[in-house]
Length: 307
Image 1 (cartoon, rainbow, N blue to C red):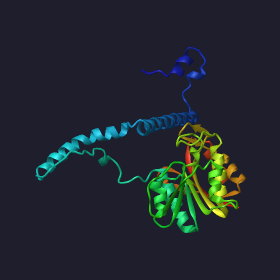
Image 2: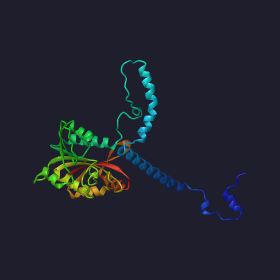
Image 3: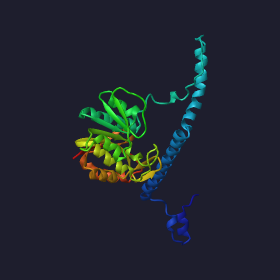
Image 4: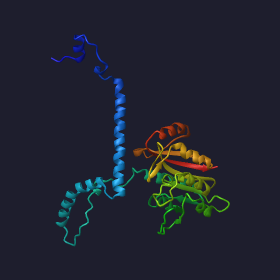
């Protein structure tokens, strides 16, 4: 026969101690929140470790696992193919492709490149300049329907139809002044996607400068003519530097710098995983910015107008 602890204590004339009380429903949300926070933290840690191993040391544990899974399929398929083919047959195993999707559509880069290219197509500016965005992504999108000039601190030796490459350091005012001239303002449209957070960290052989992002934003504004548009995408969250990969900016850090350069926020999207980019109305901005500042990381894509 089972006897409850509370009945045993009562029978002995002893008071029930607080630590003997069963957990109440009120404690469950707290425990759940703590558990979810720990799981989210572990997930972020494992993602960072995987990124470090795969991109910096050339070892991708996930791809290795998929390749090992694919090896029996490769051997079976090769034997099956040999039974009906009698020509020269070489070895070039592709083992992990069967376990991957037909294309990369979940990446924040995919969504930012697509959205900003659409904005530029709709705006049809006279001259569009890009600074540091992906050449094999965003730049290729824009070059498919218009001319584009590309500035990058690193040299680009290829010649691509519709694209003009210039080597320039966005943090260097003299380098930018050579384009703008004494009158200022070089173009009516400029994009800088997933770039400003790298400035001043030395990752791309650029000079070390803790204020590199602020100088870069000031020079972006200098390149832009009055009423021109700046398309800016950068990580936001609890402000920190993940040296030497990137900054994660507090939202108001970027907005304050932009305001000082006469850049007025006109549109704002945030990346939400499976949902892609979500546009937020002006009425949502104050609460959204506070929320973003409390999060670990979110990509934010913004459109500014120079006033």
